[in-house]
Length: 172
Image 1 (tube, rainbow, N blue to C red):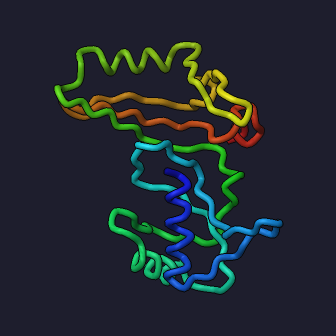
Image 2 (cartoon, helix red, strand yellow; image 1 turned 120 degrees about the horizontal axis):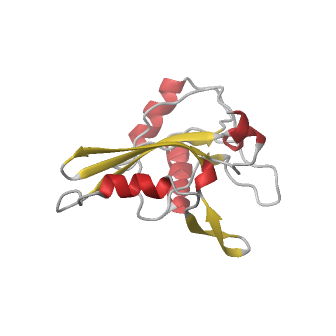
């Protein structure tokens, strides 16, 4: 889960001897956050992790130290400095791969394209106030659907990470 992944990285920083800064509240916690938390059971090849350290290290030192202590299957691909805060993230370029055991059903590519070309696709979104229906079509800036091989359809999408009405999403 998302919380397990957060704990994994908090502990990895500690084991690697990389001192994280902490939030300045009553219940202080390490300054680590993941851009867009994945749902349970969803796989990703790349996630964005935002963190702040109390001491100076090169990007390469951070990458090497973390990879040395991380569990198998979790790897730091790159470390960048001077990035923007995650709350400023406006758009996300993502690829969704649909793999079919018995081959791509006839008309699947067209059906997926037609679905996302409709005026609304309503999904149930869990919020602090319960479950609410949300139309995700306004959040999709660009989408292409392509059959890669006999068993795979790929969706390449550019989507809003924030409220689609936000200034950051409209201006990007």
